[in-house]
Image 1 (cartoon, rainbow, N blue to C red):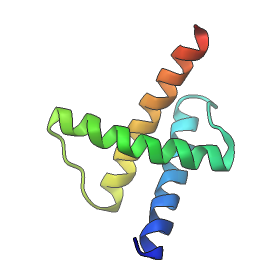
Image 2: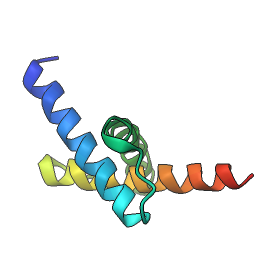
Image 3: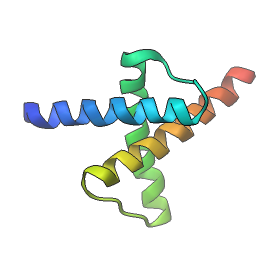
Image 4: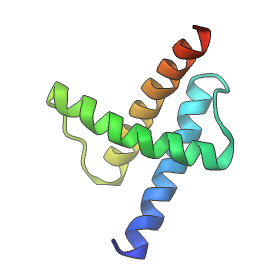
Length: 83
């Protein structure tokens, strides 16, 4: 993996995690946590979009996919914390 790709993945993950934290009303986990949530959210979002037959390409599509996945991830984590 090229260094540019890695940097782009980290930036998209950070932005997606931050957006998801804002949308879910402050459930962010700090800078490093948001990057992790964003990257995991990207994987989850790609899986969920694939199940629905949705394809989102490019930088904006990747950001949307990662953000939606991160929102779902934060929602599930919130549900598990209540147990």
